[in-house]
Image 1: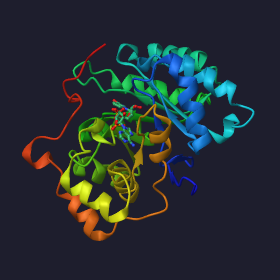
Image 2 (image 1 turned 180 degrees about the vertical axis):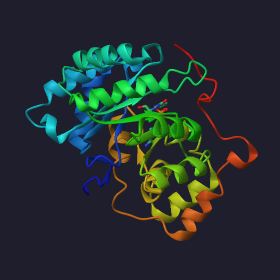
Image 3 (image 1 turned 90 degrees about the vertical axis):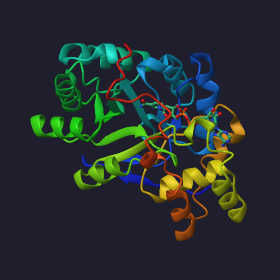
Length: 282
Ligand code: NAD
């Protein structure tokens, strides 16, 4: 297996370009899937308070610590919607660290901006404090749009290291990617495989045939070549391994151009998950 490349962050740290997504992984499944992933070569795990598997993730990390020491791993978790606000955010982080059994995470994200509640600036100031206190090496956001990013950068002077957003061939997020590039923010793609909705796509199948790869590998390779971080989720060992085997081939310019045409954003379509402007589930 080829080594997983990392992308530099704007705070001198770096992030592996592929991580394991943990949404909808049961707490009791975490040990098996994390051990499989670490053995396959993964070093980055993406969990969140709302996924209710931080405890299982922590147990898995302790069980594998002899082979995979903490400092070699990259652990991300996220602050849930009912924990916005300065004081609540500080407490939420302590609760996550306790469940994980860790002294720090590598990346702590605000999961959703909840713009109608208008608290994300205070929450962001708490994340800055948490970074200064060493509880998170890096801090970032998730599901923030350009306006939200402009506000936190403008009013706190601290640019997020990462914005984790829905991004896949049907929803390519050109505007946000351009803003991120201009401001030194790494783009991390959630639902990078489109939650399985892209596997029958004729263009992707043709490119997969051309390279002798699976459609999942073609999509993940596309994320890599765009300079993104991708966090595919699978609990099936063969797929966990397959999703990491994307560093020994390359898409050519024709492949990249063909995948670019799959974007449904111009038709006002393509999004699978909630719209951050209106999503407010607590
Ligand atoms: P995904 O795009 O990773 O797709 C997962 C689905 O694809 C699963 O059903 C899985 O069985 C299938 N799959 C995975 N690898 C496959 C393969 N090689 N062949 C065939 N099928 C395969 O979708 P996701 O889980 O929604 O997103 C990935 C991760 O992103 C999540 O686990 C979570 O960590 C993160 N996420 C974050 C947010 C957020 O708001 N920040 C939202 C959703 C997801």
